[in-house]
Image 1 (cartoon, each protein chain N blue to C red):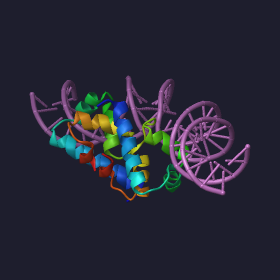
Image 2 (cartoon, rainbow over the protein chains, first blue to last red):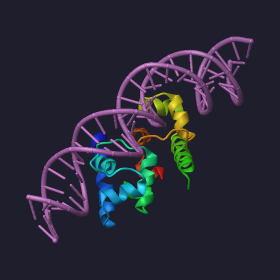
Image 3 (spheres, each protein chain N blue to C red):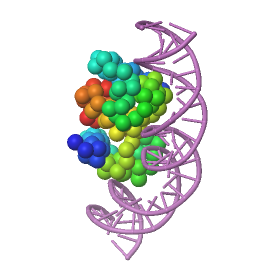
Amino acid sequence: MTEKEFLAGLGLKIKELRLQKNISQKDLAMECNFEKASMSRIESGKTNITILTLYKIMHALNADVKDFF
Amino acid sequence: MTEKEFLAGLGLKIKELRLQKNISQKDLAMECNFEKASMSRIESGKTNITILTLYKIMHALNADVKDFF
DNA sequence: GTGATAGTTGTCATGTATGGCAACCAATAT
DNA sequence: ATATTGGTTGCCATACATGACAACTATCAC
């Protein structure tokens, strides 16, 4: 698995978990205290997020970090 | 759990996995293509690593990302 | 003591994540 | 046609992760 693929996969996983909660990128982003634009870039695998950003998203989704992989 | 605690916990987990393989910070760092200094800071929770850095460490340790959490 | 190994800490340059705002596209509804 | 909603993309400033090198401490061996 390349790094690009890894990021894309993680983004997809976040998207899946978000859709399970039936919330928009905007709403999830707001709970994480950042812009919907950032969430879009994250879900599409365009940014190499830090572990704390993942942690924030995890919290907002009431998920475990394990669930992201 | 605070963000600081989260980073510290992750660093500790990396250290554990590294020690299970009986390799030094320097050796692990070399396999990840960075300096032992960086590995030291990561294990002590001083840096908010990106997900790709975690991915590299995971690879070098032959571990699954899940194992880090 | 000298040397080797393991880890920590400081500083620097470069790249990029983050946070912010705006403009845009697509789809749907009014 | 207009408005709304969900998502994407561009740009900007700031903060910080990364990669690199050096200096330092501590421990253990010779």
